[in-house]
Every structure is written in structure tokens, then in C-alpha cells.
Length: 321
Image (cartoon, rainbow, N blue to C red):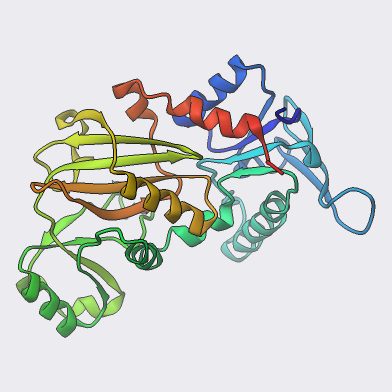
């Protein structure tokens, strides 16, 4: 029997993907409490108690404008796209201090829940977001990983790019980035040659990867025991640059690839994750990366695959013995 307590959904205000899962939970009559860490203050009050006693720590309450929830009643926590407060009314040192207290106070209490299923545990997400670690685990599991270099040594970078000829540059981690005039920027996967590398590379490590001669991309969303694989056809190096140019086809992965991807999640203690693969002309799948909290809502809209229902299944079930 599923647990009876609420599912806590931790995310920003405008999160269409979370809305899809919440709608499915509502349809099933599963109680939901939704909040964002940036609501802390009058819109979000937390009380967490620790110490010896008959009940496992933490005990206490979360209070939002519409609900009061006991921490030890939360059956599942869906950690989607939370935002942390910036305390812009404070000067910079006080704002940094206040933000740290929220991350380690509210965040720490949520990380410590017992008898709760995490989808995913935030600290497991954090570990899995490190691309060098992802690459190492994928290789150990037998997935085909393109030759990759992470370096800030200009000579090593030029040698790698010369050796592989066709190569790309990727970011090691996406971060919000704005120009001084407020215009938001992002970084795509881009081709790069040895001739383009100058001494500015020395400032930080960069990720370079041999370019795969692909015919299609594949996004795989794993949700507990369920695996949803979607072939994405386009002529783009990075399909994210133009969603209107894409076509989507559900596909079945080879059994060995599916097992390796689920083992990859298990290594990091994750209940779900979104993988990017690419398909070569010979029919081989090459592993590119894992996003432990990747977007998938538009894929359900495009294909009809029941991904939101799979998330609702996990969250409704709660922790298993």
C-alpha cells in the first residue's frame, strides 16, 4: 500500500514539467505540498527538531500559505527546479550569510527526511552533475564514450584537437550568465579547432570531445524501472538550438544499453535521470552526458509517452522497505 502522507514538490513558480506531475497526482487523489526555497519568510516557515526520542529526526512542520505539513509525514520529495533567495535588500556580505543559512537550514532539514523517497536526493543530484565523474562511470559500465579531454593546458588542448581533427567544446556545467546590459546568454556545443585555442584557455578547465559522426540524437528518460527513449532527428550539431527543426520518434534501446543506463543512475543513488546519447550510421550508441534533473515535459507532449505518470507512480509509492 502507498504511504498516506503528502508529496512535497520543491520547485520554482513557473515549472510546467512539475505541473504535469502534480496534475497526475491530483487526479489520483494524492496530497501535494508545493513550495520554493526562495519563498522563505512569511510564505514559507520551517520548524525542524532533532534529538533523541521515539520519532526519527527530523520532526517539525513546513507552513505555506495554503498548507501545514509535518516533516515526518512527507512520503516523497520531488526536487525539481528550486531557486534560493538572494536577499537583494541586504548588502552583499549579509546576503551571502542569509542565503547560506537557508541552504543549510531549510535545505539540510529537507535532506534529512526519513521514510521518504527522494526523486532525486539533492546531494545525489549534486554528485551526479560532475561531468568528469559521469564520464568515468559511463566508461566503467561499458558505454561507448567519445574521446574526451578536460584541461586548461593550451599545449595539451591543441594536441588533442589536432589528434582528433573534428572536435567540439562543451561547458562543464551550465550556469546562469548575463551580460552587463542584462541580456541572458547560454553556451551550446560548438565545433573547435587547434588554431582557435589561445592562452586564455589557461584560466579554467575546459571540456573538449571528439565529434561523433551521428545520424540522430537520443534522449533517454529513466524513471525508476521505466525507460523512455526518444530518437531526435535534425541536421543540428546541438539540437537544443532550434526545437522547431526536430522530429521525435520513440524507440527501444538495446538491452545492454538500458541496463548500463539504469546502473549509471544506481551508482549515484538516483531514482531518475535524463541521458543524452547519439546514434551513428553503423547503429552504435555513444554516451554523451547525464542530466540528473533534466527536462522532459515537451517530450511527452510530442510523443504521448506517459512520463508524468511514471514520476507520479514513484512519488505516490513513497519509500519502499
